[in-house]
Every structure is written in structure tokens, then in C-alpha cells.
Amino acid sequence: DTAVSQTPKYLVTQMGNDKSIKCEQNLGHDTMYWYKQDSKKFLKIMFSYNNKELIINETVPNRFSPKSPDKAHLNLHINSLELGDSAVYFCASSPGAGGEKLFFGSGTQLSVL
Amino acid sequence: QKEVEQDPGPLSVPEGAIVSLNCTYSNSAFQYFMWYRQYSRKGPELLMYTYSSGNKEDGRFTAQVDKSSKYISLFIRDSQPSDSATYLCAMSYLAGTALIFGKGTTLSVSS
Image 1 (cartoon, helix red, strand yellow):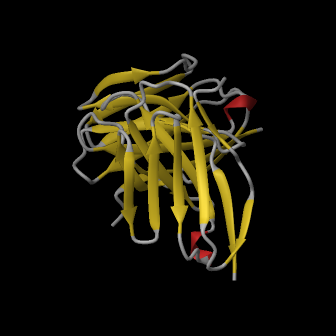
Image 2 (cartoon, each protein chain N blue to C red):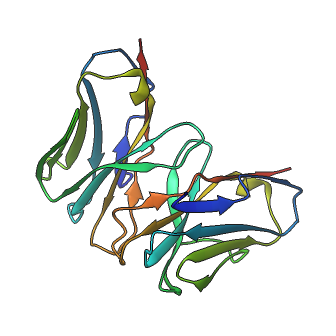
Image 3 (cartoon, rainbow over the protein chains, first blue to last red):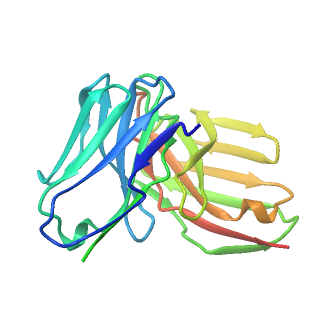
């Protein structure tokens, strides 16, 4: 029974397309996040939501739009995909608003051709 | 200077060795310090969590924080091949703020 699950695991698409990644957590956590890990393994926060409200929005292009329909779900929609968007995207959750003890999903490998 | 510096390695050790992994940071406001372990093609998992300075031990793992030197360490005793992974340090200013990650150190333990 996966705690933080994200789909799809792999996403291969053409430049200019629009795609979505879905995330769900069954841990009862209040806060969810999207992180991006580049080819050099550097992990950087993109967004965080606490009880469906956006609380962290790092410098991310407007083409990226998170949506949280409820506190157990946080989806990421990406418009007009670019080559530089190729990376692994991780969803994570944490109890409360404290971002220290993160529980990560297994990642979505996005390849933009 | 980057906020969090971590030598990417790779670090290769024989089974049974003591491993020392380190991070330095520039901002003295960091209060929460963590180590995450990431296996290939998996998400990071929390290994150790420390608030402020001091040591914390959990089985074969010991985390140390030296705030005066802005330096944190993770020691792995009696290393096992199953410890082969990338180890990421992470830290934050306050509870509820974003974690800043190091770039990770790749460890390989050979049997």
C-alpha cells in the first residue's frame, strides 16, 4: 500500500505538448510538494500546498501549474513543454506545515524530445 | 557560494568500512538538518533528522551537526552493499519553510 504515489512513472513527449502528472498520498498529511531533480541529481522545490492552499511557489515558469483538489492530491500540469523540462519530478508530503520530514513518491521521469 | 555544498563523489568503500559523508553550509540561520538516502530510480527517504547542534544515533548511522563550523556529517558503521545509494543532506531555516538540499554523494559499498 504505497504512501505517496505518482503517475505516470515515465513520460516521453514532444516539445510544445501539454502534460500532467498526478500525485496522491494516503498518509493523512496536510502538506504536499513538487520537487524537480535534474540530471545532476540536484533536488529543488517547486511548489508546496498546505490543506489545498499554495504556501511555497519558487521561481518556476508560469507554464507549470499545480492543482490541489483536496489535501490528499496534488497534480502538476505543464504547458508548452520545453527540452529543459526534462527531469525527474517528485511528489512529497509531510505532516503539518513542517517541511522537514518529507515522504517522497518514486518519481516521474519526464523526457521532452 | 552555494547555500549547501556536498561533494558528489563517487565514494567507493569495501564492506565493513566506516563511511563519513559531509555537507557544509553558508547560512547560520539553518536549524533543521536531515539526511536522505536515495536508491537508483527511487524517491529519497528520510534517514536522520536533527534539530540544532549535536549528535543523533540510529543503529549503524550517526548524524552530527556542528553549527559553529556550519558542518554536518553522517557516519555509517559496518557499511553493507545495501547502503549503496546517493545520500542527500538537507536543511531548513524554520519549520514550514522549504528544504534546501545538497547535490548528494553517491556511495558504493563492495562485498
